[in-house]
Structure formats: C-alpha cells, structure tokens
Image 1 (cartoon, rainbow, N blue to C red):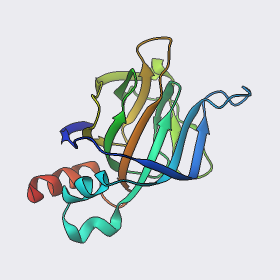
Image 2 (cartoon, rainbow, N blue to C red):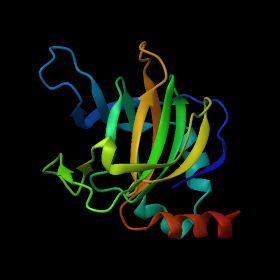
Image 3 (cartoon, rainbow, N blue to C red):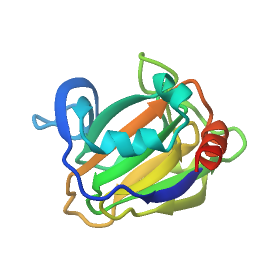
Image 4 (cartoon, one colour):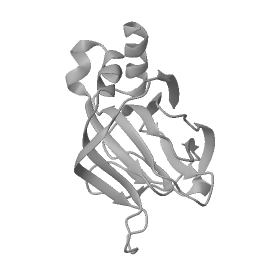
Length: 178
C-alpha cells in the first residue's frame, strides 16, 4: 500500500516540459487535476541512492502537480513509485481495497488506469505527508488524493516511478540497499 521511507531534506525542484495531464473538471475553463512534468532536481540523487544502481535505468523521474481532489483510481502505467512531497498541500492520500464485483471505469486510453466508485471500496489506510517526506507508493492499489479543506492548495511531488517492478519488489530493493 504505502511505506514512509524518510525525509529528503530541502532542495529545489524544477518542472520542465509537460508530459501528460488528467483533468478532474474537463468542462471548467481553468485547469483542475494533475499534471506531470519532466523534472530536474538535486533531490533526485537522494531518491536514486535508495535503489540498487543496476535498477536505476528502470525508474523514471517526473514532477507532478495537483490542484484538486483526485477520485479513487489506479495509475495508468506505473506499478510503484518513490514520492518526495515537496509541497504536500493539505491533501491526504488514501488507499482502498475493492468490494466484490467493484465496477472498473477506464479513464484513460494511455494505459490501464481505472477509476472506482467510493461505495465499491473499503478504506485500507492513508497518510498526510510533511514537506520533503519520501513514501513508497503502490500505484496499482486503488488510491485517492483528497483535501482536508475546501481551500485546495497545490501539491507538488517529485517522483521516481517504475512500471517494471511491483511494490513488493521495490520494498525488497530498499531493504537490501539500506
């Protein structure tokens, strides 16, 4: 589901070219949702140092920025990720297991991302990170990002993600490399 790894310490993150975005309010004239960017940051060195060197080529970095609640979903292609919460905003990340016969709603033509109705889910756990906290996330488990207030701040996250290794495999790598 998720595991707190530590804290990266303070560092700058530069969002470069936009990779992809998912809108939570497609009919609104302003953008609300999540946007992924190419990134550069000295903090990437800290994240990569957590992993065995021979696996670095199987992880890719990005910065994502959220400015709205994200419905319960599984990620499009990433199986697991190390997330460093640069600006956590006032958001919780919650994880769920599915009730039997939960409906899958495909939300992207770019991979295997699915959305879920809350009534089809059972709360499994969650967290609210502090600035620069690092968490390992199981992106294939149903999760959502929700604000604890109506004033939705921006959440900025530096991420090392993989579509090659499962959450369990990355947990083992982190233990072996510590």
